[in-house]
Image (cartoon, rainbow, N blue to C red; front, side, top):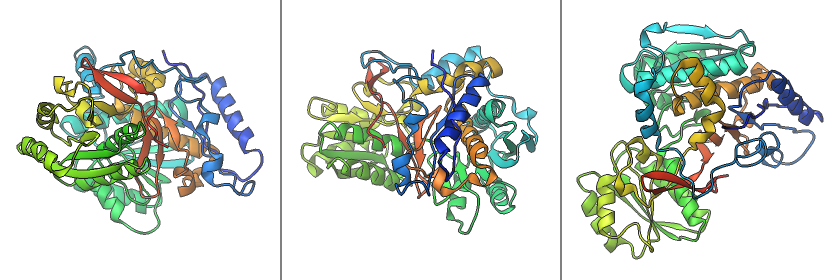
Length: 448
């Protein structure tokens, strides 16, 4: 069972008692006997007390111990198998549990909390299929965060986007131009998030929940993307000495984003991306065959899968003896959206640590009668982050300085930070697929 963690409020101050403010906040929340924490925030900006950069004075470890240290549950040793892939967990638990609140229960707009800081959240509550199911899970995650932390700090207005990209765009534009919200959480529709990222002018920050969203200035990408996972996995292998990498990536819109993130991560360790090979399911075998004539003796091959299955590429690689002693195979979190395949065996994957949701999982299941997943965790974290900023800095505290602080935030999805270009970075565990399960190799990738 995960140990309880004190939740520390964001403090944006320019006075000597900054540290005291954070300590007092943690004590107040402990006295409230809140269940295990979802978010520990270290965003203390003491500008007139120190000439150091924010990254020099912001230390999440000073407030919540990293995983494996005092105040948190120790991470399993490398030889111990962790839980099965998220998709397998969901499949195993679904028959015995109800899913997220039924779509018919929702109004177009509803409000939670009575706090002075106004937040707008845009979710596809009444959408059909998985989009609506995920939206309703986010809604339940937001409700739990409000009950834990936000009721007296935030007035959270939740708008139903219906899963319609055009309608979501209109709601989002209204939210950032009406002057009524200090921060917008959502939308979950990719096209709507991309539209916001193209807009200029002064506006409240947006914490976008869209999958595979690259981000933009002031429009932050919340979810782990395949580019993040691929880059973190490549960095972990490069940190061990590998120098020459090949990237197999589905041809399409995300190709350049994944390539850029991987190349940047490798450069930190003096490694290089020797070649990027776009492929489709039908061309995977030929692409792998051509790889030999394009690059000699690579140390590692990274396989991104996008919305499709990685198995066509993996089958072709296996025929060439990859993975093997000379060549490491690196996968991504998108592989885990499908049941474990025998072709995954021996691959390394950087992905979110499912145990990080432990602080909220038991209470969530007891309250809503189903197992929380990453959608619940993302929504919980963003509402908790908003409550922390509101508590310490008030409605005006949602500045770039706070949201883009270099040390980041620890949430139920692990340690993350937002960058000035709107992208997010996550420090996540590194696993190896052995006998159809993820086994921990390192507690955290090099990350930040």
